[in-house]
Image 1 (cartoon, rainbow, N blue to C red):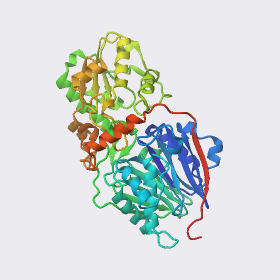
Image 2 (tube, rainbow, N blue to C red; image 1 turned 135 degrees about the vertical axis):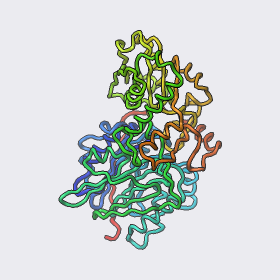
Image 3 (tube, rainbow, N blue to C red; image 1 turned 45 degrees about the vertical axis):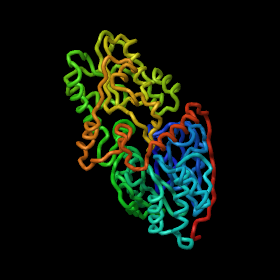
Image 4 (tube, rainbow, N blue to C red; image 1 turned 180 degrees about the vertical axis):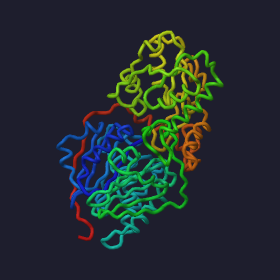
Length: 508
């Protein structure tokens, strides 16, 4: 999972992009990067680490220009410790292009082979984002007439990209001397929206993974970019949009609503906060049917994502709600931390249990999901160590039993605690006295109740239905073998890459 930004402004954008990345930091903590354009020069700085660690004042000063793109990375393809795989990526022909990508391509190996054998393009990293950049560059080169590039040409190129590329992708790219391009895969698996800000010098445009970045930067959200749609914002401020996919069908990733997105965001017309309240309501119904409510003394969330669901659940069941865990906000999100050892160690650094809320009580803990089970086991043990009499555990989402191949770091069945286990076996593994999961149809209704227009979802980690239709058992075996051969969790600190790229603007 990653966060992306693209902006065409009337003023320098380096600070705006930096601030935007801070608003999207929850979407990736392994690397960050910004690329800006000014005159006949691209400037880029990127590196491993969180936004505040990657950028210093000297780096910001070296990023001039009124347009640019930015990225925070949480790797699902390639290497987590290779600073060369931090984004954005750059290619010098045609015109000069920078690109940032959120998602995962499912046919990247095929495309990489095509790039080399047919298109004569070289891919220098293991990142599928570099593959996507080169596919886009190749198609732009094919449609360009003479030295000029018109919006119609750009949209024809994106249409060819849509036909060649499989998987999940929300992208922003800047074409040197022309402007910023953004597009979304035909299923709209990964989120992307845009907004505007009116200034004395004209309209400014910002594209972002989540609406919270638009609002936090003073932009008015216009709408989500439709599945299969591309938008192009020229440097002169003109805006163009076109549907580029043959058969678009909105199927957003359901895990955005469960966990990834910030609660103050709206994705595809559904408030994340409102959907999580609904998840709590449906989970309350499930708990009422499976547990004796008289045995539960108090409901506690695992902060922060599950808090809306836990509050609504407690309200529906007329149970006391308490905050039993205090969160250290200077430790990253454990689910997206690479490596089991790092993840396990971080749990107790991240959360501290307040004994006064646990001692002698039967506690119902509510979390948004149970993925690997490491966090859940540690939290249950913390509750017991703090004096809890019994510890019940509820998940606002169903069991995660299957790999996700669309940009979420759960590609190995052996890493998923629910894979091949019954609910009772999972309960024993995490050490709880009882375990209740949300029903998959109830989870979908939680979102559809908020926006009835949303009827299809990418929920493969729960139901093994892969919406792109190209995922086979052999494919899953292959990515698991690749993951086993290149274990994560051994990141080196401090990798950074700074470059200044001169180019000739087409038509000069």
